[in-house]
Amino acid sequence: MSEPSYILSLDQGTTSSRAIVFDRRGSIVSTSQQETTQIFPRPGWVNQDAAEIWTTTLATARDAMARAGLAGSDIAAIGIANQRETLIVWDRASGEPAAPAIVWQSRQSQPVIDEIVERGMGASYQERTGLVPDAYFTASKLAWLLAEDPEFRRRAEGGKLLAGTVDSWLLWNLTAGAVHATDVSNASRTMLFDINTLAWSPDLLSDLSIPPQMLPRVVDSSGLAGTSTGGLLGADVPITGIAGDQQAALFGQACFAPGDAKNTYGTGSFLLMNTGDAPRPSAHRLLNTVAWRIGERTDYALEGAVFVSGAAVGWLRDGLGIIASSEDVEPLAASVSDSDGVVVVPALTGLGAPHWDPAARGMILGLTRGTTAAHIARATLEAIAFQTRDVTDAMTADSGLALTALRVDGGAARNDLLLQIQSDVLGVPVVRPTIVETTAIGAAFLAGLGSGVWQSESELSRLWQVDRVFDPRITASERDARYSTWQRAVDRSLGWASSS
Image 1 (cartoon, helix red, strand yellow):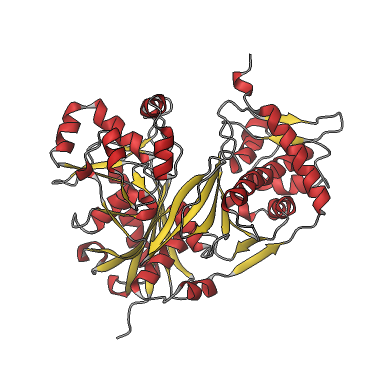
Image 2 (cartoon, rainbow, N blue to C red):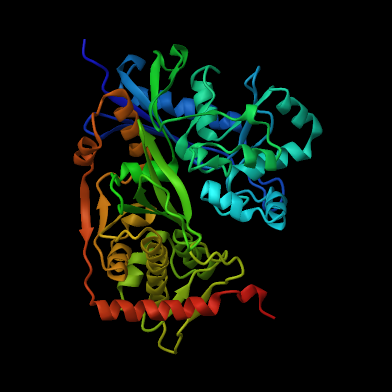
């Protein structure tokens, strides 16, 4: 009887749960996906049903295995990739959720962040965690829950409640409550984890009055974290890979060396650069995060988040009505040779890294009587590329590592014109892989490495295949001139909503 060689990757995202089965060549065998519900109880609040997160994950896992004709005994390992920063609290005895899951997007814990800043603790949090204090991260969500309900706090302090991010919740359920753990990449997104000591920070837990007994044990990103119980998938299957979605995508893009970088184009963009075995403090308010820990080695990354990239194309469709579908933007933008001096600054929800200006607002500059919808469409794609350069320039300045290429994934990575513009703007090759499901394959790579299906990162690098490389086609002087114009436009958008 042959050894099991398939990897089951559980990719639990903000709007859906997916399961993908990979074979030992790193090829997709089968896929299953179910949407999940987002709940908006008040303006700015975003919640989910933790029970639904688990039931849809289990259902897609079983369905993906059935589609591939596989039994539990055929699965060598399970890998988990998950939406980061989302908080789930559950009852230790019953396993039932104790509150709605508070999604990473939710701003309901903003008062906790305001208090941290008012007390002058912002620098202390950033120094320990590598994160700029924000309601985005898990810590303030948990502190907010504990402060809202005295009975909730009493149960937590009595050891009756457990807290974790989505990976911890899935691991707990897969192991029938035997394991309460998280990996270092997810821990580093909580704003409670000291990325220098690689442990929960007693000082920060005390500052937010969070009972440490609620928190999970921190484990490696690759290696045995637990074993799923046989009743779930038909056999006991080791869980040997866990990573937050963006770190999983970095691993799935085989960005194993310092200076390797990837950009995921979604509603916004998440750009991560591997910075090696030590955190690199950022002078540009980029985030320092743990990429993964495998054995004795921990890799770190710098991360920059752009708020609006694919959403800018959605705005052309829904707000301006100049395209009927997002796919229409490429032929429309390609119908003109350049933007004819038009610059779009898509600060529709402020600007993220490296500007971090919530008062910035979107602008279209350089309009003339000759401006057409095509010019605006092309300028929008250029803006997505320019925002990426804003982040990569900050990363190279912070890290001292030169950007030699950018690996890309996400929905907009299918847009050839955007990727060519991106290469022109950066002056380096832009590389699109054959498999763009990089979050799922990253979790699979970690699990396969942790279970012995694959032996080394060099073996994984050979599995990563290139679909197309986009090389720069413009001169350095033209590139610099275009970028200078972009910077002038951004300067005009900054602070716009706070201007008198």
